[in-house]
Length: 88
Image (cartoon, rainbow, N blue to C red; front, side):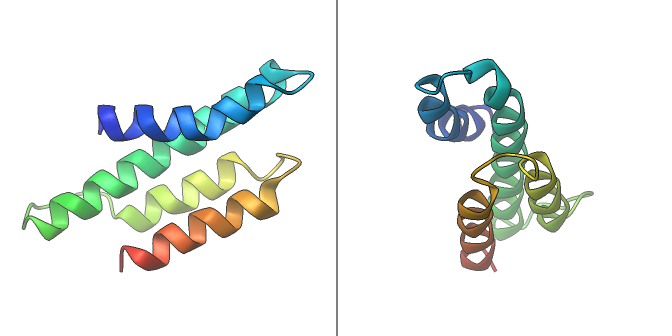
């Protein structure tokens, strides 16, 4: 999950670095990317027949929660829900 989480962090946080106040957005986007990375990795593990203690759905919910106050939360929410649908 470290590589997946790092890739998602880069994708979500890179645009924020060009904003007027990147420090305002990067913590929530980093938290969101971390949860998405965990959800993706766990789904991959489930597909590989590994036992999971926390469902990927929990991580998707936490990712949605992490971006709830972001000014572009609706666009981010759409991306997360689309990712969620494609893993089930």
